[in-house]
Length: 223
Image 1 (cartoon, rainbow, N blue to C red):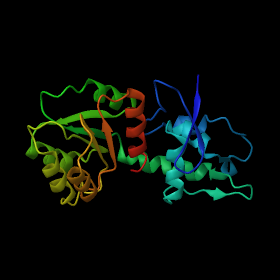
Image 2 (image 1 turned 90 degrees about the horizontal axis):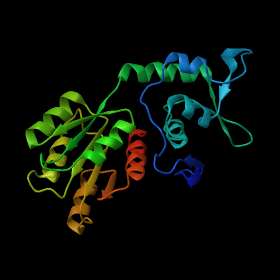
Image 3 (image 1 turned 30 degrees about the horizontal axis):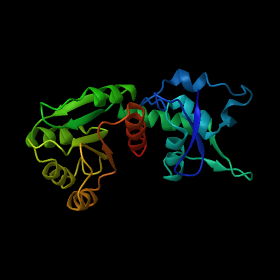
């Protein structure tokens, strides 16, 4: 049974409990051409954000973010709805195909239990990567340029805040989204460090898998 939730921009979005919205980084060219639209005058065919979302297997909110951030061209109709030209969608697809599949880097200690995080990452069709030390995290962030960084701020073997500060000071990975997880709520000092480190999200463990998948997808949609 699907339920509706309100998106950031005020749109109702369908979410399947226990699964969360589906995400894959790049659809195939065949999927673009097999979308159910009128075959007449294909060059002028337009799609709604929700139709585009089904093609890319992302949330409707992700497509609206691409539109509002001027990454995906779209026209606002007199009735207030957005329409996307099929040709613009194909150009956008080719650009994303050049980027390819990117991993999600988990920065935590070797003793940390990661099954919940790994399962959530795989559900977004990304590959989990791991870093268990300060040098390892920085080097992988620079050379592999992951789509998302996940830090466990509750473990004490490595200094997550030091790693975040160092990564943010490095040109190549400085804009990668960061998600924090922790066993306890953040203190005022930690919250200030999160603001300074341009952290985009924080989840308290144990975290529901559907919520974790949804949060990861939301952060990935900003890339």
